[in-house]
Length: 422
Ligand code: MTE
Ligand code: CO
Image (cartoon, rainbow, N blue to C red):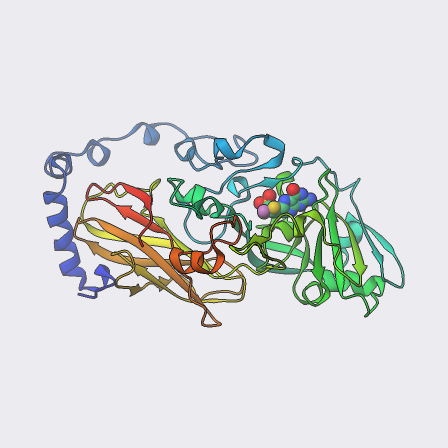
């Protein structure tokens, strides 16, 4: 039998294997197998009447049984709702695309109500012709579609000093991954005739915080998008309707929502968001600055504290997400013993540039406890560090840019807990 994949054994042996699991597992399971199961033998109510008509849900919501798959916040982080954050329920999702309805939100001054009619985008500064675009103007530029992750620099930030939050939604849920439709920023800068002495753009949003950030011109001309659709539909209000900036691979704070102004400058503005915030103060008091690209990172999403194993020993799908702001994920390893030994996981699809990659490790769980970890590698040969390795370099003053290996202690009863191994 293959070590990684119990399903690779012959179909026959897998089927007989599953019977053994069924009988040996819980009493109720074996009783159900031996007595008539009414869900199989009896006509159910849903076959005896009509379901809802097509006009019942003009815009569909998840069925009530999935009501737990929602954004959540951490109470002690939420001093004020308009300057706060909630988290994507990544423990309950699969594949890689995050539905907008449960994608984390981060606001510095609340999600504003801005219509397409009232929307304006100005490009000024070192340009031949300062321009103002309406929403309709933007729709007339050639547009592109790309899937990218957006990770807040503070993701996993509460874990620097120790294992703290008992759920992958809270430790790693400041991330989402969507297919964006938008106009390359390069085309708008060309339209305005940007001056080649302009080495930076300063971007700001229409909300009270404005969330101003400086972006080097090379990046602005490379792959930054002025986006108005996510996963095929208009951006949700909380993600910047009607237009936001998409800065592939770079920290979420630079993805300015409700973007209203782009100024071409010859030096960075050194705004609040790039000096006192989103920088990492090291042990010697020196702060790292311009740490834009998010380093390679991964996490097991299931099993995890919010997604315990309920089915007992036997075939178990271990799964998680990996990403790198420097390019593609090429490999993910999984450890069941806290990093002593590793197995290479199966990538659901080859890694895509600056997008989430789903990995699976299909194991035959013997029911003993595990210290589950995952370790990502990207196309540059970079390997995700352990917590100790990262602390050795960054010290303990940091909040941001924590990409260390996460450990879940999975007990014999299938429950999991956030722990640290040293
Ligand atoms: N843009 C504006 N205008 N105002 C903001 O508060 N928050 C930033 C960024 N862009 C913010 C903003 C931060 S810190 C992050 S992590 C991302 O938006 C979050 O995007 P989301 O709310 O769509 O998840
Ligand atoms: Co952020």
